[in-house]
Length: 569
Image 1: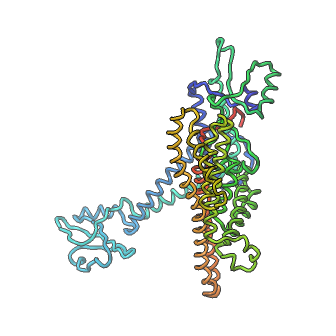
Image 2: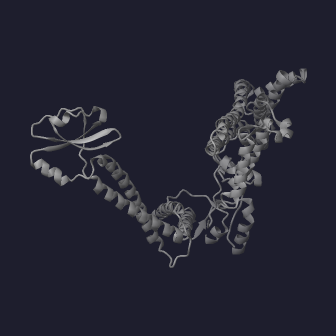
Image 3: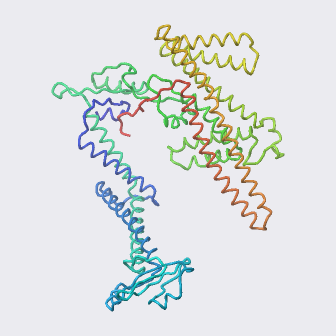
């Protein structure tokens, strides 16, 4: 079993046995360690070697105690700050003095009211001591005699339990202890973080090892163990070589969809960058096409279309290139993706004629690019054209997938939709096909209606086909209109950039020295905010077009399980 884990290519099929208390405890411990690691990674670190290894259990226990104390102090600090705010207007009063006053027959009552409502005549009718005035509020104490009635237009306040000086001392003590805890956490992070990460990996690995053991089928009085699992084709030679050397008996067969095998995506370097985006929706099922390489170019194009600014795109490219060598290897693909998205943004920035909110047509240096720039109406039609193309492309993928899985009869209906859309496009707009387009339109209707479901009889096909035809006509039209958001988002970010420039440019020559400073502040803050808003919209809306319009027309079902082999990692 240890050797199988070392090879690390088998995803074990669990037999459904309940996990033991030991395994559950290990998973809980692993979760705690992960939480501690995340906390320590956020601390200030000066990495160095420990003088002596820390006991894993003792270290985790100490970290949990520190974290619990830190949280407790944080709650206490919030509560005491609230008490200070309430007690501050009353100063450093002495509870003993109030007690002594009460013994003389007077009761101290605390009041407050706005300055405009405070009446000097109250001083003649009552024993009043004004304590303070803060933010146009008067805080005062009325010393009430026995059976004396107090009739003043003021709000009576609760007597603070402690004077502000005592509360301040407690607050300072909490802050000092919080700093001490922070220093200890920084020390642990600097010295023991790698050791703690390693301990977390080992605990998780041990938990998985024990889980695999109890999910192994035991027969012949536990003398024979049978392990079922899935292995990718790329990992099969290494496993078979070891099994042949050791003489273990094994059987192999190709899985069928009912086996619910895991999914391991295999894409080129470009498409791999977009796999995290696709996984946000779902992995493909085992017998489905992976749509990542098909939606990747569209997503890149849509992002650029939505942001559409040469300046913003150049900034994304520079950030991606500059930061790529300065981050962990796991983060680098995201920065590479940012570079590609930045390039697309620059391209569509040229198409829309926008650089940092400025009109490129009015800048002489960009005169040679005027031929690439489109008007707003042309950009609107371009968004619809790209949307229609992606929808037809998705239908083509659906037709191919159904042909490969079930046969040509199942591919006829999506092919009919493609032919019908192209025929209607020619009849309504292009007007070059004439009667040929009309013939193809009728053929497409027959393909859709008669091959809506090859499993049904002729009348069942007709009924289902007519119903599907209604959904197709309304659905295609609605799907194409959804791509208007590409134009709308690009226009909105461009308008915001123009507004920011309109506000900042007059500041440049307004006041000597201060004017240029204000200009820079408004430009940086304004365009920074616009970049973040445009970036968010440029990511979310292309993702929506991908997961709804494209996936639907491509016939994507999803629901695949990620390949997660039994290994030391």
